[in-house]
Image (cartoon, rainbow, N blue to C red):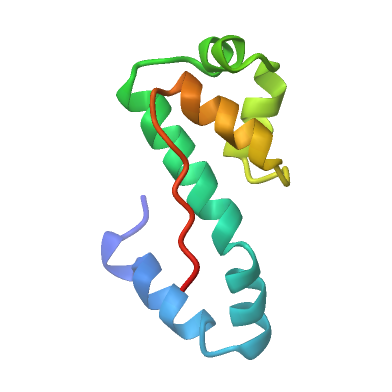
Length: 96
């Protein structure tokens, strides 16, 4: 059994990795997809819906929801709108 004292917290790893400009660039490229996935998953779980149930309400397939949640898609605004409506919420886009 591993000694838990040898484990490195993810926050420490991320802090070190972010010092690498190439890593930071790639990480920041994924930020939008991460935020979309995190918010869809959170809203779906809060409403106790399966991916299949959400897909049906949004008029799409379960595989599409899976790709959105797995950050393997570049969704259209139309799809995001349908998903948001199926979740009983709205899309909010913020440009810093």
